[in-house]
Image 1 (cartoon, rainbow, N blue to C red):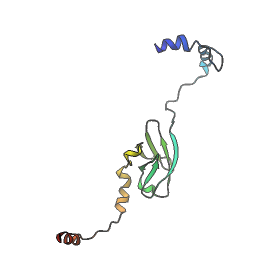
Image 2 (cartoon, helix red, strand yellow):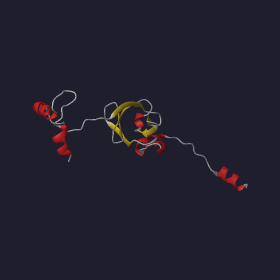
Image 3 (cartoon, helix red, strand yellow):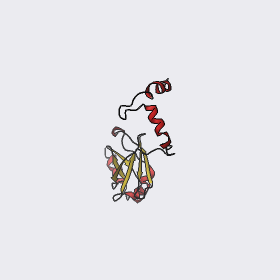
Image 4 (cartoon, rainbow, N blue to C red):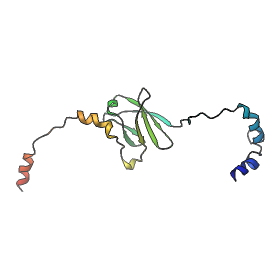
Length: 139
């Protein structure tokens, strides 16, 4: 049905801009048309972000993890695609993180491997719990 409408109505009308019959204009231009490229045109929304000290970037009100080696000083490039994917690129153009864009209410998007180095370097003070055990026994 669509093909019939295209052939009998759309292609036979006089175009409002160039004032020619659409089918005739297409036939005149056909020899000059090239095939579409094999790779789809990237329509991603592109921006830069600065990586925070906790290895996260802020995008549209939410936070997304990036590898720890980018902490604090690196500017990264983000591409947000129409399909809801977020790709993060380093200064060399290498993809360093991929996430699904999330609504603010769903919280942060974390890839545990991004923060593995931070957890290894983290120095947490430990102390004996005997004082707490003694205090609990007083009740």
